[in-house]
Length: 355
Image 1 (cartoon, rainbow, N blue to C red):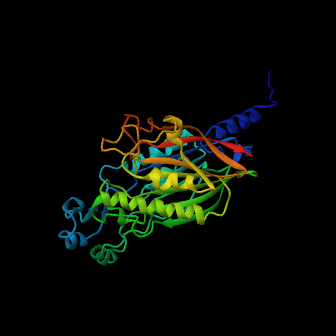
Image 2 (tube, rainbow, N blue to C red):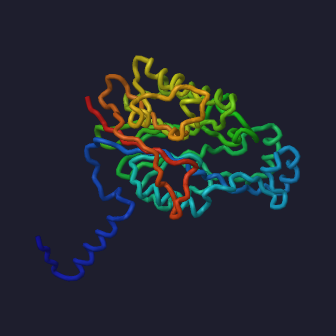
């Protein structure tokens, strides 16, 4: 079929509109249609700063803080010298844009938030709580001595393509006992780790709930026990505080291995034992035939990772989620093949079933 243009100006206008439509921001050009599947992903962006300047306090605390965390010469608290930094964070945002996920969750979205989101103009995002830095130096001294939380930020991020709508957000820190380690065991208590709950409206008939989380890190018994407390808190939130019948996706850095932790027994099995719920792990169901690794003393399998995507259906609800695929995103790398995120992201596609 041939097209005729009255003049070059009309041709130029059409060409410009085509170029604009080809960018990452596809949101305002697309009308929502009936949703049959959604793609989701969880990414730990390793966004802690290389160091935080704390001035003369470095001299005052050098005796109580392990020496590997203090650079007295630059008066800095060393935090994450091997992180992606500014350049790597820009590439993380570009990579997310390329993947074109419908919904994604971020962990450790601290000091490089602007760099990550620079390429993500096609997405709406949840609340950003701020950077990991020491603006009020005097407040750090009593907090360090009393082992109180230094930075009241959770580092959680949440992105949804703009043609969809975030209609609710709840931010919740972990309860007492759900974090272990102040200046040891991955320093989990330095920030307010926790979880967030969102409702996302995809079309008039389709709303899905999401939880993105970051659990305590580490492999000591105290770390494992802390995660057990967190899973109990999460179960209580799902079963007593969520008022919708929407299907639910829970994603994030669980810091759990099924061979080491009791995630299946204390969370997934517990939900399935509740007469109102059905739950499963998308990666386990799609790649392992639904067979969960058993507890063992052997090394953690190389193909199991800390990130998880769990789904929960309400029995007899109008909408249900069925995992269609799940995979580690092993090409989440820079031009030299270096891994951009803290560990490979996990992505999943869910089919939406309608009763």
